[in-house]
Structures are given as structure tokens and as C-alpha cells.
Image (tube, rainbow, N blue to C red; front, side):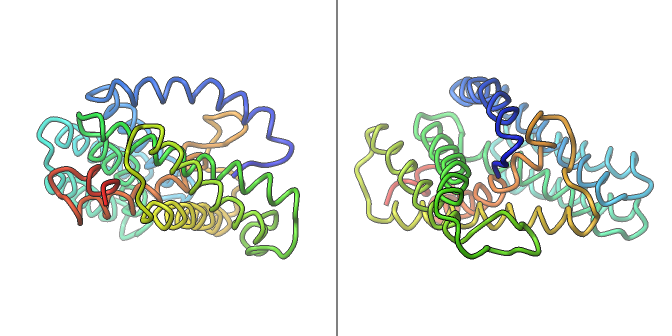
Amino acid sequence: MIGGKDLGPRTLSAAILAPLVLAITWFGDWPFALIWALAGIAIVYECGTVARVMPRLPSIAIGGAAVLAASAVLAATGSGAGATMICLAGAVLAILIARGRLWAGAGVLCGAVASLPIVALRDTDQLGFVAVLFLYAVVWSTDIGAYFTGRTFGGPKLWPRLSPNKTWSGAVGGALCGMAAGIALLLAAGLVFSPIWVVLGIVLSAVAQSGDLAESAFKRAFGVKDTGSLIPGHGGVLDRLDGFLAAVLLAGLIGFARNDLAPAAGLLLW
């Protein structure tokens, strides 16, 4: 989430990365799958490093290779089941190499969540592009809305032990902003309004905020401030994508549950 003294560097990083991400999202296909596979591999590395998994490099290499292979299978064949099995096998191997450290497998699964559901939702059609933009709008607007409403209204802390700066007012404001931005995006794309979008936007926003808190708990457990330093003002890739991982996982599950052949339609068309 947005932080006070880091606001300048965070804004600059976002100004550089956002157009790049949007362009690759529009293009789709292999460039889109590759950029998210790289994000997944980075998350495998960050999780293994923060959790001090040993031996670090072999377990991280296995996990990263599994994420890359799964992404390639999903992009080439559309087989979500095959990609999932590859990542599960990679997680088990990483745990075995790390002498039973479950964090090694957890890192692989986090990397898989970063790289697979988003590619499945994007697919190759226009609705897939809209579905991904919808997720961007909800999560990014939640982040921004939570910061500014929390700063404006203050009030009781959301969970002081995990994240002392977050407030209930920020959480509610973030959820409302995320929902509104998501609906505005869908309407601008020409979709017919559904009341379910209100619930969907609020739930995805709340889940994104829960993902942020979960990552805060993970870092606190190992006594680190950030999972990395790759993105100025944000920290690591997981620091930037913590809430997005939770939201895209839920969005993917909803989409597949309602339409396993076209998950974007399952997510958006009610």
C-alpha cells in the first residue's frame, strides 16, 4: 500500500511501469504471459530469500523453473490443469530440496498465483483484456483510495500489530473507490451494468486488502521491511503485487467456476 515518505518514488515508479504494463496487457499473447512469468519467478526468489530457505538457490531454481514451465504450457495449450500440476510438483520438489521447509513450496505457489490466473483471464479475446483492466482498476484504486481516505478521516486502526498505519476508514474508502473504478471501467468498455458488479468490486477490493495484510504478516514473521528492492518506492515484486495476487486468484476461481472455457466471461457477464 501507499506510504508517506515513499509517495514520490512510488509515484515515479508507477508512472514508468503502468504504461508498460498496460501496453503489454493490450498486446496479450506471449509477451503478456512472459512478463507475468517473470513476476512469478521474482516472487519465488523473494519468498525463498525472506524465509531464509536453505539450500536457497536449488530450491528457488526448481520453483522458478516450475513457474516458467507452467506459464509456457498455459500460454501454448490453454491447459490450466496441466499448468497447475506442474506448479504443484515444483512446490513439492522445492520443499524436499529445502529439507521439509514448507515456505519453499509456499513461494512456488505464490509465484504460480502471480503468473497463471491472470494469463488465463486475459486469453486472446477483447473481453479478456477488459477483465484484466477491471482487476487493475479495482486493485490500484483500492490502494490509492485507502491511502487518501485513511489520511483524511483517520480513526481506529485496522490491525495495528500487522500494519500500524492502516485504518478502518481507509479500508472502507479503498473498497468503495475500487468498486467504483471497476464499474466505471466496465461501463466505459461498453458492458451492460449488472448489480453483481457492486458486490464483485467490493469483495475483490476487500480480498486485495487482506492480501496486503497477509504479506505484512509474512514480513513481520521474518523481521523484514520489504521483500526486495527491485521497484523504487515499492520494495520487491511481492510488495507491489501482494493485494493483486489475492484478488486475481479469487477472480480466476470465480471465472472458471462459472465458465471454464471463457473465465473472463464467467467473471464479468452476469
